[in-house]
Image 1 (cartoon, protein in one colour):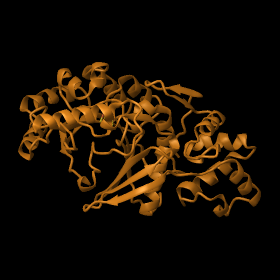
Image 2: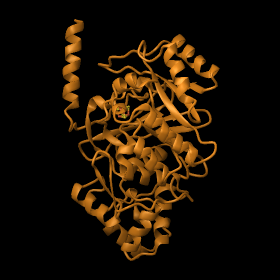
Image 3: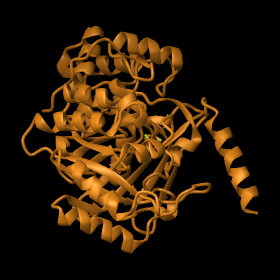
Image 4: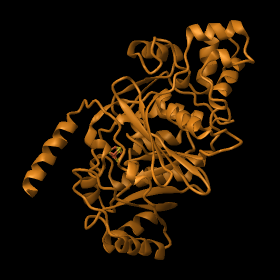
Length: 406
Ligand code: SF4
């Protein structure tokens, strides 16, 4: 069994969002917002094992009942209490009237020529997020979203052009895994088609800390999806203090979107760098890696033609990577309408990789998958009711660029 996290009743994220970890407070919150459960009843997808045990205790039920229900939800993918045949009728009726099990609504499902799947999932009637499944010979990786849109404004990212609306609830995050597992016929511990989860879709996971930690707990729980720590990867743009906070509750794999080997360039590409410069981020990563032997941190580096792909950039990157156990993922840029960057060419990417490999920095080039359905890295958009006016700004800039080019 994986651990459940004892958490304070309220966690305030760096964006000032408040997450409730007390079941009653959470139920109240869901009731007020409507949540994806609707009807004001708690959605059981919103709780990890300990949260469910607490909720059942509040309902006057034995905690082991929570575990029975959890197994039905995640191992057999059953959402109807009446189908839970090892639970007595009286309890099934009680659960039906007090709580719900509601996954996100699948609005669209697409399969790319290379077998990649993309799902568009409605989360509240107005907004939708995307998740992507990438099958490979020896594993199947699901990339999930953690926010509706993103407010961090990384310059090469399609998601951020949509603006930001809100954090996803834990139910909406774990619900993405549930929908994919159901579609794929994944059976935890037996026929695993879904072997890895990366929190790398829409949004910055560490700005939705409490809900992300709860969802990751279910991903790793034997009664949930039973994935090993190393098979769940949280990808952050570098919120250094939150990396330390993550280290205090979790052992998942850590990936950092670096994208530039010096502060001047990184601040241009990832504006968050102004607040948490490279030295600060790497120090937090080194602390994260130091807690366990054989832990490496993966650094994502998007390849942008003429911007960050020169040999001197590779040499600067080598120096940074020597500071901690690290590996590098070179990510060919996937253009999207209005993007102001181009992807580096193959020869440049290989030459960049060679400099790193020659310096003994383990470096892979990520293969682009699912680009015929806009499921490739950095292309996830979903449907975002923008609260930041970024979409309007982006459209204005795009119109100016088009007029200029004409
Ligand atoms: S790359 Fe990630 S953190 Fe940066 S804007 Fe896009 S979704 Fe947000």
